[in-house]
View 1 (cartoon, rainbow, N blue to C red):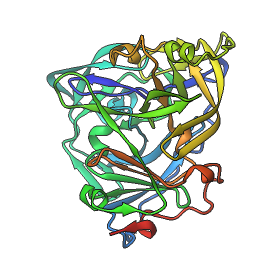
View 2: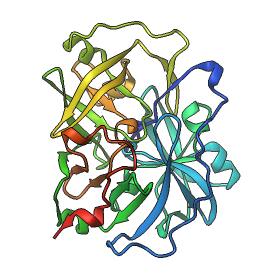
View 3: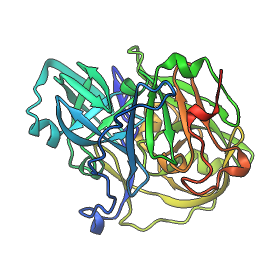
View 4: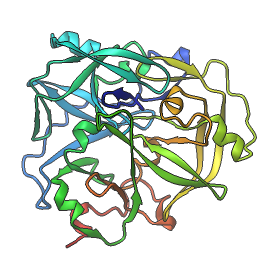
Length: 343
């Protein structure tokens, strides 16, 4: 979800929601997975199981102040980590006196408090005194998970995802940045900064119908999206979506203008075929000053069927499958990072 926090950016998960289904959650996310007792000999600092919920978001069990586990979404579109009010109230988390942040979500903006958290744990890794904001959980994005682990947590590491094992590995950043990877495609990530805080979300370039369009790399988004300028520039034929279909962010809802299927999306040597995109002029595009130019959001559904590594140090996304392999089923023919690292 694209949540942009000034100072500090956060991105708010967008999910297609039909009102009659808002109280139904079919994805088996809240498993008591537990942690690996012995780490693989590949240099990972921690290993944690992940699940993929109904709309494609990647979720993990995390502990807050020693309590839990709680369900957190991993969100590269969120510059800051989040707990939703239900969890904040359950743990009696106190606001940091005089500290509020202006949060720009996908759909709306608002000021919200920082809260005092002593520690946040994922697997065997402990984040002491994390910077965490509390958001209302009324929107569907907040009712399906307890919180968000954003870029301010993730970029402490190089983060690897194995679809075969369904685990996320947290590596020392230098371990991945100093290696080369045979059989992986490197996709350049460009930090998109807002304000002077140094917080960032990440953008890479996609090609649709031979046209290049910048896109937010947003694992917290359950859908892909184009703004109106992108749809017009591509000459796409728009078919109005059902009136009861909306996008749900962490703060607000908004109607979808149209739903389209794009035959082929390419970045570097990786391609996706017949992918669904929502067309909507979202507030986040204006926040990034891209409302009048073609812009896109690529969500988790495009990435949860292949191994990938986020290398924040070198601003690159390493994707396991080359162009002729991207349609391979989940869990088949996927090597772990330790099997392909060439030093």
